[in-house]
Length: 349
Image 1 (cartoon, rainbow, N blue to C red):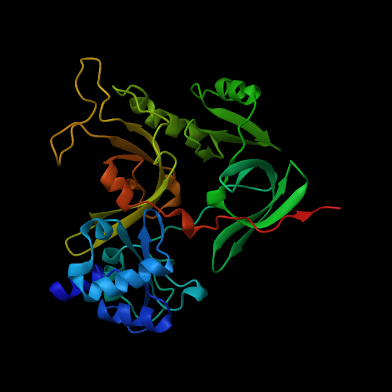
Image 2: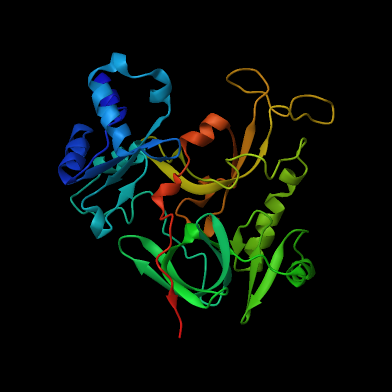
């Protein structure tokens, strides 16, 4: 109804436990639940001045500009209790509301909520690159640990100065670009051009052209086959030239399981390629016509890296999804969710 719609679109961030509980109750969740609301503007968390302006302008709507309002994004995380205790959580209200109907007082009842169990992407000994201050540095995975509060983190050893860094998140790590021998090894193992393969002890590690990592040949080959259609697209996807390339997203899609039951799937992915509004196919036709404006428009190709064998509902998982720019921006994971700066390196003696 109108009351719920107003609350869902209220651009006022939560600031403490009381405001998180009040927001949860107002949205109809159980009394012990919390809703943490962040206000994002232009991909970053709104600063204090913007938050003050939001609060002031919300009370006097006529004073808020439409351009300013459109630049804001509301990001809610729904917790079935105290977030510090790693309770069940959801990133979209539809999934959380369905769960709340069956809630029986156990904050761990849904085994993590609709977020799938986090699978480690890296292992000890992996050669990687670590992002710091928007640059990537060669490093090696030394240790992996799982924090109850923050998930999987790693200790890395930097090749540049033999220093170490603890508590590095996966979002700031990628497999190191291998040398030409890795390309040759992937080819010998039956993978298409652009794939890379390295051997860590007795196990192979495969890296796809878009940067996805696979630790067994069967999964790598299956993914390579699923991408064959994409490679023949006309016009082809651009791999660079837009600020959204490489950005990470959280995409929610719902499916009906039976007459009364449904499930909301949440998948994390990244923008791999795009088509410009000026691109044309071999016949000279626009690469993409917007369904909304009926005019040539940019289209973005989002890749999801989750493997079917790691999910409760594998048949509903998407390998990729094509979206217009506005759709991508609505589901972007803000950069400031993750630490921008690494902890001080510890020099090894």
